[in-house]
Image 1 (cartoon, rainbow, N blue to C red):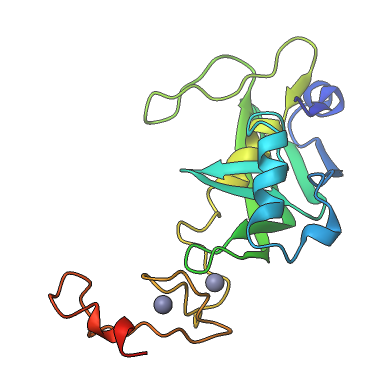
Image 2: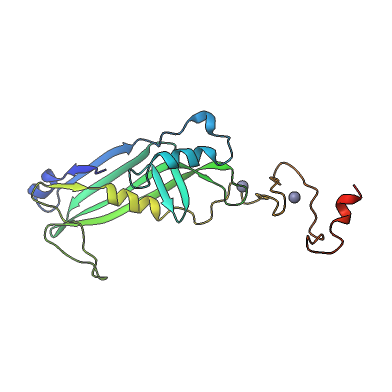
Length: 199
Ligand SMILES: [Zn+2]
Ligand SMILES: [Zn+2]
């Protein structure tokens, strides 16, 4: 899915010409009434859309992130001679599953955009090619927005820094309930079964 921006006014007017654009990408289709289902809404919507089909569904490792708000961006393009520099901001709200308790939760994400579109093929200091403005004068900002979102995604998303997670033995969500498991009982201990017999 390309997001093409026409930069002809910036490229033809010469050095100093600039253009500021605003736009938004629609959020992923997630049913609002699924919001409280443990991990189900994100999984269902993630299954329905490929991670490559748009910006509203991102994947980091095997963790899915869905935009539940439009992805709003504002970018200024400036002709600086050898290239057109793009600088801007974007923001949205994402939903993902907590790595400790597996419940869905939402969080705000803001990021910045910083890229250069060159008139002739050029490489950065690592030998990676810069995007090029072709004869049409249009550039695709989708890769730019995607990169900007990906760099801000958390590696281990937790719904709350105090999240207690799930019991390792019985799976109870320890945020709202206690379970009967105790750390002292080793399931392999010869007398482990006695605890159950005596209840
Ligand atoms: Zn949690
Ligand atoms: Zn337990």
